[in-house]
Length: 190
Image (tube, rainbow, N blue to C red; front, side, top):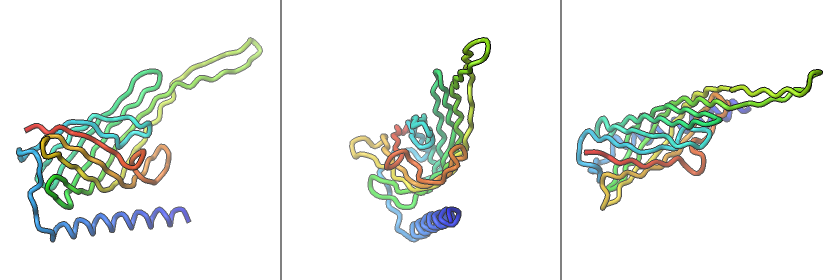
């Protein structure tokens, strides 16, 4: 039963994404309010990948007016360590005056290392040992997103994304974004 529900959700999302791309192909093109350079590079942050809710540094490069690639890297070091590395491919579905509506595909890897302390009672006394437990998870997903620009700040892009994904560590298929959606902000260089 659970596999049937997963397949139904996956088919529904795939159909919706393909329908959006199909409708976008026939829609009249409008010039969006975006940075002026044809090869736009934006640097900022993204909150998409981490199961721990950690932000990642993000670099988005617009290959054309309708397609972009984004890479992101996040890390945290201390008693517990987290390392995120991933990427997205973005295809614009609809352009508005100050907004892009797009579909995205996501793949990423997260490695977490946590300190595990165990205590054992033996004939010679109480023994406490601490060891590192490391786990690496692969995340794949897809969804929809928006990026908008304020009229007075044309190089500052604000974005929000939502969709579905699968995480190999938790073995869960579900929504991506740790609350209503995943958010990001980028400054585009000209």
